[in-house]
Amino acid sequence: MKQNITALLMDWNIRFNKRQMPWKGEKDPYKIWLSEIILQQTRVEQGLSYYERFIATYPTITDLANANDEAVFKLWEGLGYYNRCKNLLHTARIISNELDGNFPNTYDTIVSLKGIGPYTAAAISSFAFNLPYAVVDGNVFRVLSRLFAIDTPIDSTVGKQQFTLLAQEVLDKKNAALYNQAIMDFGATVCKPANPQCNTCPLQAVCKGYSKALVNKLPVKEKVLLKKNRWFYYFIIQYKDSVLVEKRTSRDIWENLYDFYLLETAEQIAWNMATAEQWLFQQFGIDKANVLSISPLQKQQLTHQLIKGQFIKVSISSIPKNLSKSQWQPLKDLQQLAFPKFINQYLELNN
Ligand code: SF4
Image (cartoon, rainbow, N blue to C red):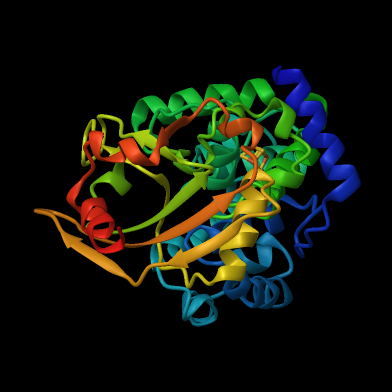
């Protein structure tokens, strides 16, 4: 299965990947390093102009090493996290003074440089030197956790080890640069956080998260469960006289209670009939969803968390394949199940 996934990702990359990045295909380790450091805590749109200004002002690592601190910090202004800039200068000077300005070309030496962690080292090693090191960024965590239906929290120590090993196994070792870029682009454009394009995804047939209808529950993050504000969007999917229900797992609030199909997001989503329909199509291939209602915003304060969310009631005319094994509860027996107060409040108002 792993080889199959690698081949499918590479095939997607050749046929469909249209994502443009100014540093894509770049082979100069200095430029790759610079772009990765800028993007560590900065969004691509914001980081782009900084990257271009840095390259224009300091075209080589020696130029950067010879610059005075003030000028470099001035150029960095607005990006924040100034430690990144300090480490950048420090490392540029080490490479310039001790290595004759030649960027090291082994993973172990690269990862030993100040300010370069395993992710950045893998990115430089693979993109510049095509060395077989898999990058594991947020996109890769998400894609792998869904493809293999792994619910180990990605921000736990065990999770980081597990996903790093898996990423290394799935890596196309002969084409590490191309593959690493492909899986990150795939995560950014197809297997997106809240709106993955499952319906048209070329990896759907091998995706365990999809076949088990777990896509929106993956990846699991320990920190999300401890977050103070959470957005819950419940899809009440009705087929004939039944409704899709799910039993909640023990790791989270409302342990062992029932709920409806949940999409939890980090931020609020402004739903309307059209976006809800589109979402159902992209997620499940439901093309004749009839969105019956979208509830007003509802809130519930728990001891350590504020839950906010909405209920989107939908009727469908056939059950999508990956929901066929889910629990479809007859509407007349809904009251036999125990729901959390957040859901009961809605049901009381809407029955
Ligand atoms: Fe991601 Fe969906 Fe494709 Fe699976 S089917 S890889 S969850 S987009």
